[in-house]
Image (cartoon, helix red, strand yellow):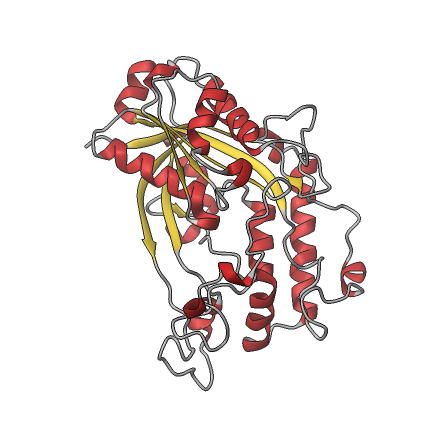
Length: 353
């Protein structure tokens, strides 16, 4: 059976929303830039062979609205015959485009696809601005189905309270995340995956001057007696990324070396574990195994990747739990109601979602 392989990947730097390096960049320009850069990594692939351009976007409105993917394809100078589709699975939107490319290749619909994603909070702030936008059955503590509009910060507060996560632990985790991001940036690790945008070649987020003492002095950001601060939660960002996904047979014919092989993917809706809406009682003493489900998610997805054969050994060495298969699983992506500390870790260490 034909397999799907990733043959190129790149991203823009990540800018701080409203005050960072990409504040004036249009999202369609950003993702078109990433798409063009990813295709330039595989010059043996003629752009007319691209069967579809798929772009994930959490807030497909305003400058990210209409069919963003089609605009991006044209801006990236792909032929007019190449279509585009815009996909929304919130934080997992761009991962969903990889999944769609994988499925299309396995189904024999085409041999080459662009899977990309973009978000510009500076240009588009898609959160509800008026109560009229909220569905009454899905809003509020007494919502008959579920409260789906809880912002990330308040859900982080709820998670911290329910699972007894201390402010000190949150700050220590945040400082560790900052230190790791700074080290990765200074070592050039992130530089391998970034295509500089208009002279900007590094992310705005990592802060070398961050210390645990400074973090401990910050005021709560979401409620007066809370634990979540601007320092231990993720920032709002602007940025884009793109990968080229091909069938292994066509890549082999063109002499293009795969960087990874996509093995499988899955999606699942996850209910709030204990609430009046879920009709399930809360346990008296939640177990450690059930704790991760406290992160309220409308959906999570995972995709398993196997590296190209040349790098399989190193991946096995770094992932002992999967040494026999050489397979790793991406972190679960979730809606803005995730734990802020969890989201910060993913933002600092894995930029492709």
